[in-house]
Image 1: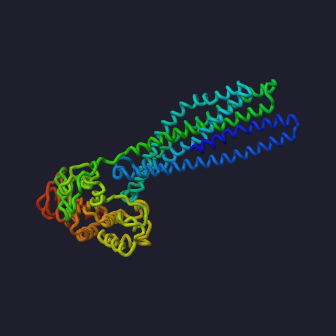
Image 2: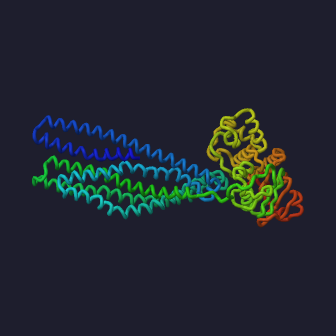
Image 3: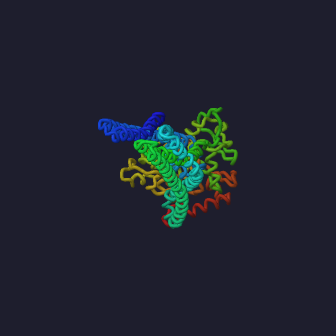
Length: 556
């Protein structure tokens, strides 16, 4: 930045050197008829032009490096923050806001740093030009110096309006980006239920509102651009008029008249840089606020420092809020009347929120979080799928990049078999090495869900908590998954949060949650016989699956 400021100053001040050299060439060469002096000054003008061009190239390179370096550093800070807050992010900030912060706001804040070069140079060049004009005539210098304050007074209120309009525009832009992301993510579903045109009309209406807000920003900006062009032009005309009168009266020479015009014309460049910098500063402030808002997000308080050791082996999980007790080494089904209660339970058992859950009698919040994450895995049915080959998506967290081999393929093949997802691999042109885009949108909903299940099985945690793992597959596939899942994890603890009778029928124990508390415990068959509420709950789910099988549509 210091190098940029130095080069910017050299370049800006160098702009003022050429009018001086031209004035000397006129007074010492043309007016006196001294050809040798004229040639010397012309040579000096050429050398100054080359040096000025070189200084401009170095300045631009330095400013580009500063901008790109700042963008890269800011992106790294943002990425570390996103990784740090983890599961909190979707609950605190929309995906569109994150996308615009990473793609738009970082660039705007980085551009502010480029003001250091031309900004410092503009101030120094303005002062140098004023001193030179003062040496010619104090009145010319005073008129020139009044230009910047007058411009500041004229456009100051407009800049404040611009900042407010830019803030509203950025907010609406983030909301529209979120809406677009949601539509793209659910395009298949929208097409299936006939809602594509409805959401398209809603998106178009929001887009029109954003365009109107953009016109507001553009209207204010157009006045700023107009005034920054007209006001310096008026001062240029006034100074040239005064200098011409002085030259006509013999107060200054013709060469000095040309130099005065050159000085004032050159001053338009630093003034333009200062005004352009003001607009960039406003955009940077708006963008910086959004970045700081994201950086201020903190993970949910899921416990303090580790004060207790984790159980040495498989241990009982107990959730006092519901009364649920998960016996180690068992396949436990949990059927909740309210799906939100099931999700909240999974968050507590996986320590994504604070709770009174104990693990082998030890408060889960007192165990080291890394230990909890390594041994207890919550696999949501809609978990994010990153871009990459299918092999990369499925690999376990401890697998090294490039460790693919026979053993690795065997593990992946077994997980795909349990998740009934071999057909997914068979249907891809390059099998496991087929590239899959972000969120695997090229796959169907049921295929994505089975890929997520296979990924969770490959992680092979001590405790696996599955949230509706088969909600998007048909009943026949679901039955295969249920049977194979039981066989794939013998002696391991697995919790199935679902109301599917097919899944629950293959569990060791089913827990029925009503109003946030355990209302019944037993086998699926026993609860069907003794618990009318449980019977109604799973019957609704069964009906949905029957409809899916009859119509060929996946169950929701």
